[in-house]
Length: 283
Image (cartoon, rainbow, N blue to C red; front, side, top):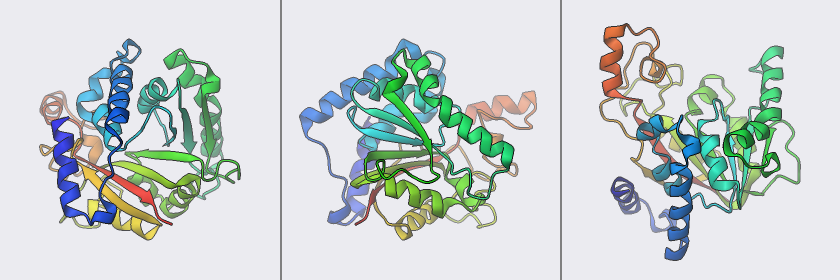
């Protein structure tokens, strides 16, 4: 938590007063911390807990100011690691919604489109099975033809390690704009993303290797109707040189192409260096 507080202080110093990260009331913070700690510590997460040291869910969600009574969208849930914890945290008083790619974006073939729709259809049951809560507590949808009833209703949307795919597939603009439509006027997007070095060539930091430059992500979000609120170093890993020829997938958990000897060295480095950024919907 000290790491998070340092990050918050640093970001407040480097940002204009209008974009400094507003803090919830002390009583609200105390309640949030207690419920979040209970969700993180739940025995239902025992199989997921090994990655907490790399993904730091408590620090990350605290920085994103995710409260247990909020409506939160998780974009591209994938393996549902975060979904299982968010379900425990939000399932009692809030609402967790899985947000899936627009299958008609032009990137996906017929089989992939069917897979996207099937993933959204089974998402509530998946999270219910992991949390022991009723499936009615959860929802999911694709970003194709957003229902008017959903627009302007989300407090937070989380985009976890997915911006590189949106960039390399050339669908980032339309997906982020759809998420912006879903957010309340003061809603925020939290982004966790593999971080390239600031001087990395664009050919390496265009998403094809999994890494993006932090400044590029901030500028992209600002162009698409968001104000940069702040950053946290909760998910930083300075042992990652972020220059792997095979991209981020060289590191755990993928360890693509690694020999048994290399796996020991790569496990010691850990998962990727990641930026953790927060943006507010701009009027």
